[in-house]
Amino acid sequence: MEIQNDPSAVALEMLLIVQPEKVKAVQKLQINKKQTESHASHPSKGFRGDGNGNNKEQDQGNYLHGTQVTVEIHAKNSTPQLFKKLSLGQGFQENGKRRPRPPSAKDFHAYPWDKSCLKSLAFDLKQFEKLDAYAKKVTSKSSVEELVKTLLRVAHTDLEKVRAVWMWICHHIEYDVVGFFNKDQQSFKPKDILQSGKSICEGYAGLFEQMCRIAGVQCMNLSGYSKGHGYRIGQTFTGEYDHAWNAVYLDGRWHLVDSTWGSGSIDDCFSKFTFRYNEFYFLTHPALFINNHFPDNSNWQLLKPTVTLKQFESNMLYKSDFYKMGLLAAHPETPIIQTVNGKVTVTVESRSPMLFMFELKGAKEYSLMTLKRNGMNLELYPQKTGSHKLQIYAKPSKGSDAVYNCILEYTLECSYVDKNVCFPKELHQPVGPSWFSERQGFLKPSLKHPIIHTNDGRCELSFILSKDLSVLASLHSDNTSLSDDAGRRHILQICQGNQVDFKIHLPHAGNFAFKIFTKKKSDSGNYNYVFNYLICCPNSKVKWPVFPLNYSKWMEGYELVEPLVGLLPANHDIKFKLKLHSIAKAFVQCGKTYPLSLSKDGYWEGLCSTSGCTEVFVMVLENANHKFYSHILKYEVEPQ
Image (cartoon, rainbow, N blue to C red; front, side, top):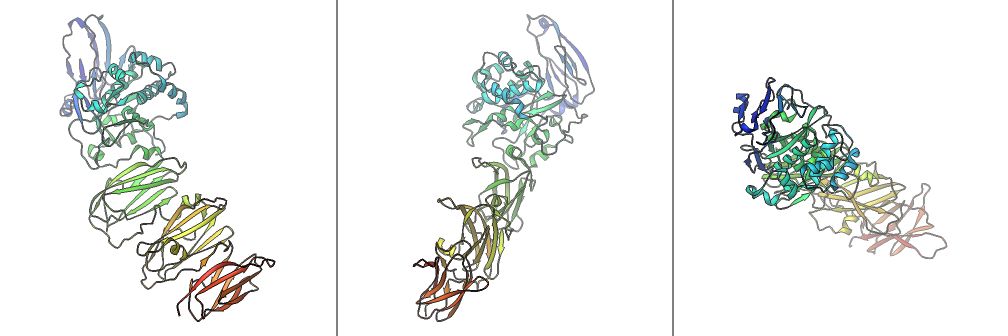
């Protein structure tokens, strides 16, 4: 006998006594006409699907599925007995134990959630370490009953039993990619799945339900729509339900699990399954589960108020890694966003510092991403109209071995292109100082904003170094054939103790990437990139020459006051002023030798003439007993 009931209906008790020898067919009792009509277009039958709208109906046998209860009919040779007592309002009894009723619309199922709890039941994963290790190693496949018996050797509470069943299925049953395309040849009987080690979502859910039932834990098979493999942003859901999962009854309430999605993933070509355990789908909090699971009966959302199908279709899809990494929110909260004057802004909030990257498919990436201590801000300027797919990735800030995982997807609708936006190709994301540059040793930046605006082509910035670092900086632009050496010559770097200062003179107007590299002073290897700024100068009259060339003998703590330009005018008297320490003598050589004298305020000063010379050198004698002078600076002289 098959019974369809409305979980919110008035309690109705039935005593079903079956005389097996007289049973010749399965009869259906219609409890609530309104409920039956509401499901007429989506009959409560089994289906076969991958979560992508690809499915086929199949009678589901003796499973508890949605609001349908199938009553077991004993074989003809079995002894007549009272085997079921149902109370649709208060639960029904099996083997002397009261079974909990499904949730109803009158119940309050909203779980407390503070965005820090991913589970609907509080527990510490460490308590399952031994159980999980044991369940993964169990290989018993003689029968489902024998398998459960083996698992229950270490699982005693209902929570432990469900955990053992979940862990075994997720690590031993693979998604049947080949079988998905040959569904008529598939069997969804748990014993057959156990032997083959393969199935699709219906088989996962059916096996999970039977194993829980054998273990004495109440479990329901649920069906509905899902945003799984092949889901497209903005799509609508109609027709047959495409996915199956389970609900288990623990600690007096229902909880949601999806062992199919917990076991692994399928590649983009839908050709290969990879075991990749996903803890997120074990007792997932209903407020998060609804993100990509929409049950055929809204009561199984376990939410109040419930989400409508239209809301489900239009809501943002957050990947499981979004929550597992401790991310809190993303704005905009709609998956399809329109550019405004050619620009889109996306922000992500997190509990702790995270690293981010992104891909904008179908459009050239003109972007500016900045890191915040609790998230990031991304500005995009697509350079082509139309629809573009934006994918955002993240990884924890600690652990260099961690990989970036996709957390969000948007569709950008661009109706206007801002051609005035131009970012250098060498500009790396993220831009500007952040918690990450602090972690690399750069503290207290004098300029915290990622963009430096200058009208005269000059700017300065400074940092306090928290580590013993050697620092190198370079300047890059798309509008010039600026070599690496020339790019560095437009930057004057001054180190005083643990402070590093940069003076920057731009060669022309435009947008520049100012990049900073470091390495440990004790390290003889290469410099490593740390972060960069965007420098913008709109003044077309700007044309600063390079700074003087400094040699290896230019020491930390040296300071050049004047002249700052590396190209000196011909036939002029030039004033020199430098702060130099630990030297005995200093002079300027340009055809003739011009000594520099040490002033009372600690600067080496003097004059030299550029008449009749093409190069000017500043030289020092480090020790009065030495005979050789060292070059520390070199200037060019303009042609006469």
